[in-house]
Image (cartoon, rainbow, N blue to C red; front, side, top):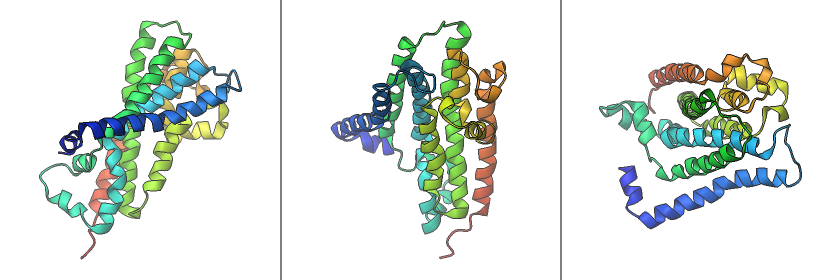
Length: 254
């Protein structure tokens, strides 16, 4: 229904997508401005930073398109309109994902894919079969990891009822951090996003294998192929958090 209503005004949709491309592209423009003053950033040249950027932006764009609406769950909990979703013969999480589905978010995917495509051409890599196959696996796994974070944030809103900004710190903030090489951050932060909130498996770890770079915090070589396992684990944990949050819901009492 939301897709049909969006496409009812085709020109408006096209203009919105173009505006989204422009706004999301400003992140990469900031990186280009940095490289107008330096040749490398944390030991990474521009094509390699663009590779990191493209992986994280594309993965996050996919997750945001599917689960981005989960961020407004807190308002439904506060005003009691979540009760409407509970009465419908459909999974509540699917309804939350479809609630005011914003097709315009496809602009973030397109922008990230464009940067990733340029990076793949410009980066100096000896492409083997394992490196080529790892790319789509990394993008899909990264989207699943970001999606799990979005679902976990939505589950947290059952308790706090107004934690959308805290959720954004781990989603939008995490995606922005992953645009840059791990070498520009402190070791404790890198350890945190590797072992506590495993966002490093969105791009840092598999990109280290593709680019022939040292792995963050000395991970073993096989860790580059672990993103699917990390994604499954994150989705399982977020699913448990979602079930616990939904069971704790008691409506508004009005």
